[in-house]
Structure formats: structure tokens, C-alpha cells
Length: 466
Image 1 (cartoon, rainbow, N blue to C red):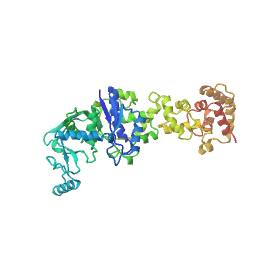
Image 2: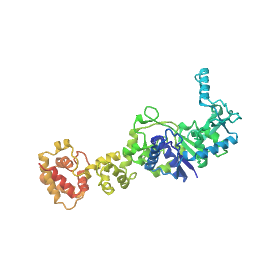
Image 3: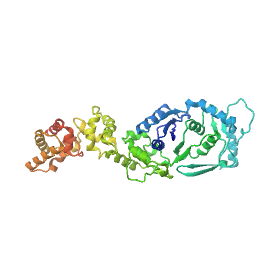
Image 4: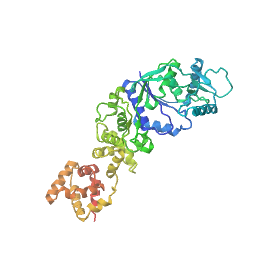
């Protein structure tokens, strides 16, 4: 069975681009019945924090990208990397390097004087060294000088790297902490990873990792490198371009399924560009063959449009799900007594207008706040003396109504309007403002039904006072 992994570094929030990588791995694991493994690559101790690790877990959990194994951490496995480094030394694929930083800096400076444009490569000073001085050392991989490394990427096709471009790279630091390429390969072998899917910025690491798989006489996994997520300017997407962390979009009130839908479309096409896809549809449709090679520009407007489509479509966000996701934002407005059931009754009235759950909570506010917050400008414009008299009359008519449904209330008001020779436009806005405190709301009869007899009559009575 396929075994895939997501291996973020806990040095900050989970970037939206990292979430896209996690999603593609998760989709393939779920489609094929394979396993999705979470691995925290925490060897950069200067930047690793517990808060970042918690943010990664929190973000993946909110997105619903559940993992089958893990989370594993590398700092808990240091003895393992030492053992595997010794295996490579014993088989002649690696060696201990005793060169000091000062010596390497001197060699780098010498090269720079000879050729300012040349990139420094470790010259193999300790490659054939046989003495074992009592000095700190790193472990380096002994790379081939001739030949090349070729693999077939599931996205980019056949990739060939001449070995002459490589150098004897460090596997294990003097303190026993592995560098990225070594730690990743040992982890992938011991976790039996069959497919490594990650951003194309990691393509530079793949030849080195293939060297290590071969040195260990281990099966080389498949690779799939994904196009990069760029800002509108073409730069690497970062905080200065706006919200880029998963938790920011959660706090902005985006639907987790809408986030997945947008991220899935970034570098992949279902062949139905205008069709919004649910989580289960994404799993069914996903295939590596439909991944593009070109980097894409992050589009906040398109992202918001997709979120709106998910929120207004019951097939994508059922009323129960909508209510559960919107409730925390309603509570954040101080309406802590409101329940999921309360919100669910109101969802059909507001879902077409709300682009996010933050907007949904704002639209829901007048239904649950007693009394509603009144817009001063709306009150001044629509609740004058003439409107007050008409609202008192509406109050009295509705107080006699026995069936409190939108259709029955509409019929009652329609009959009264004929009787007093008025039209709905003559009372529509004053009635709306009296009920919600706003000039924009769902239909007034739907609002009346949702508020219920007692609350609606109380609001009309309050608004009709001189």
C-alpha cells in the first residue's frame, strides 16, 4: 500500500503552501487506501518551538487532514541516525571529516580570490584520510565523481543530474544531529515511505537523497514535486503579502473544505475548473497526472469566491455543518447563550450573503441580540413619527395572528395593506429596521418567523414608541 508523509519543520505557523503539500499527500493516501504519516522535522533547534509544533497540529486538525501514524519527531531518534551513519562509514559510502570551520572558510576564501563567480564545493580533504584524531568531526557522504542520477518525477517527468554537480555533503553534525537530507532519508526508509511529494524547491535535494537510498541498498521511493505558490508580484508568498498561515484563514472565518478546494486547484486541475468540489469529490478526482508544472500566483479574490461558493451551497456545507462552524464566531460577538440549533434555524436566511463565517456571524447577530443593535442612521431615516404610527398598526395586526409562519404573516400583512390603501414599500424599510436595526436583512417575513412571536412583537412595540 502507498505510504506518504508530510514532514514540516516546527519553526513557525503552517504556511498555506505547506498545507497544499499536506493535502496532496493526504488525498493520494485516502484515494489509494494508503497511509498518511505526520513527521515533525525538528532538528533545527535554534528555530524549533513547541508553539510552532502545536500550531501545525492545530492547523492540520482544523483542515481535517487526519494522519494514520505520528507525529514522529527527529530529536527523539538521534541514536538511530548515528547508527545509520556508522553503517555508511563501514561500507565506504561515508567518512568522518575533521575539517574545522576556520579551515573550510580559508578554502572558501581562497577559491573566491581565484574565481569570484565559482561556488565552493568541499574538496574532499578527509575523503581518504586514515588517521582518527581525537577531534570533533562530521560525517560526510562520499559522492560519485562520474556518471549521473536520473529519476522520473510524477509531475516533472525525467530529471537527470550529473554527479559532477554534487559534493561530499554533510550527513551528521558533530553533535549527532542529522542534516536534512540524511535525516529525511533514514526516516523515509525506516517508515517505508513509497512516495515523497513536496514542493519543487526540494528538487535540489532529490539527487543527494537518491544517492543515500542506493548507498543503503534501499528501495528508492517515487517523487512528485509540486509547483510553487507565489505572490501576485511573483515573489515567494510571505507574511508581507497578507494572510498566509492556515490559522489566519480559520480566524478569518473560512470553511476548511473551501480552503482545501482552493489549495487543490493550485497546481492541479480536475478538468472542471468552475465546479466546486467537496472533500470526498477531491479524493475521487485527484491524480498526479493532472498536476501542472508551472508556478502559480496566489489569488485572494478567487480564494474568497470559492469560500463564498462553499458557504452558500448546502450540498457543500450542509446546514448542520454550517451551524457548527459559525457558532464560535457568533459566541465571539458576546452571544454565548446561542446554540448550534439556534444558528441552524437561521442558516437558510443568511448563507447566500455571507462570504465567510465572520460575515455570517454579523448577519446572524440581529436574530440573537436582544435588543438588536440599532444603526443610528437607519433609525433617523426610517423610524420617524409616521413610521412609528404604521409600526404600531402592524404590531396590532400581527398580535392577532394565530399562525406564525412567513407565508401566513405575509398574507396577513398583504390583506391589511389593501385595507389601509398602502403598499409594502411604505412599511418595508421601517419594519426591517425595527426588527433588525439594519437597512439590509433577509426578507422581513422570514425574519418575523425566525424571531418568533414574542421577540418580534416586542421589537415592533419598542420601535413604535414616540
